[in-house]
Image 1: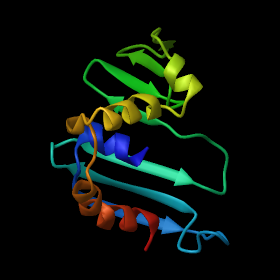
Image 2: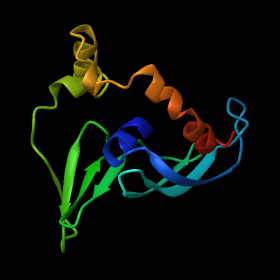
Image 3: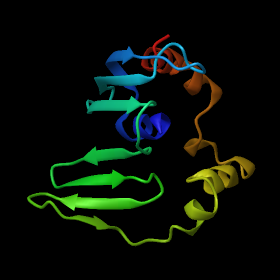
Length: 136
């Protein structure tokens, strides 16, 4: 989910993170929130509470609409000046049958289509951000 958000918004240029709580399997924190600005200039915020209810999700706000991926494999849209959230109809079969994005990502990997894939150097460059979010 974090990779998807930063893929869409751009890697963080500046990020402020806050954590609290703890779990046996993750003693550093169980509640996470923060905000920042991406290298593309997008403002972003995030929140998660592993001790509460909920599901993964990403929301992208434009001047015309809110794009909602919750559950992550379903796109919904809320248009400006409306409170109605509408489902966007498209072919969701691969994301329902497999983990969302996994089938096409694996296909690109096997066909050596690298421009869509995060390489190990990109992933390594994000580790400090992920550690900050996690409370390490």
